Image (cartoon, rainbow, N blue to C red; front, side, top):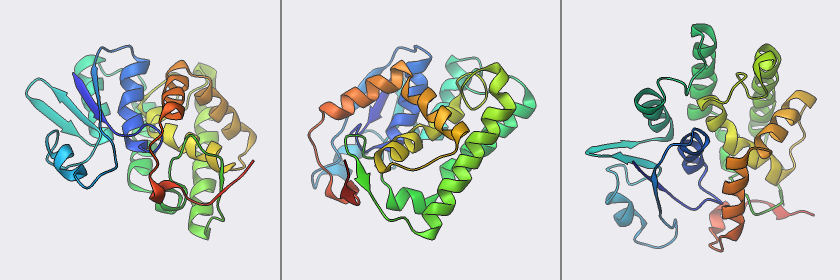
Length: 218
């Protein structure tokens, strides 16, 4: 398998499938593409018809879109273990993952992932509502499944991959969270795969001006 990703500091979508592959110890080749330059679309077209990342190339098969990649990997390489075991928890996990995949536009647009930075933004009411809803999701999941482990559904799952970039955003912008949500952030930040991604992001030097939102904070 070969996974094509972009800049680790900024590319939230790239983090998701990388985290799944890494956390389950699967072997894969990694190709990294810069997000800068006028030839970006041309370079990405070599990997995917969508001209976007991430892209998973497995033999003759090309899978694009982070959630689709995670689904494929879970089915083909993890015997379905990317999702919770019980049907109810699995449906719940898919629901909150789909909600992340298609929603929270206020948060995404106003607080782009920028791991290296500590920034301050004045969020709109839409972004604040997104933060409240995400806190609610994390708190409810951790309360319901906390007896099985510290991840959203007890053991690590695709749902955690989908929310990993949100954790990065909340750290960058100093977002205040409830106690349960804060503990989930700590679980994510304590994970070895996430630590490796953050370390790699901090070694990068490329700057994407459009993703340098807000003002610097201490």
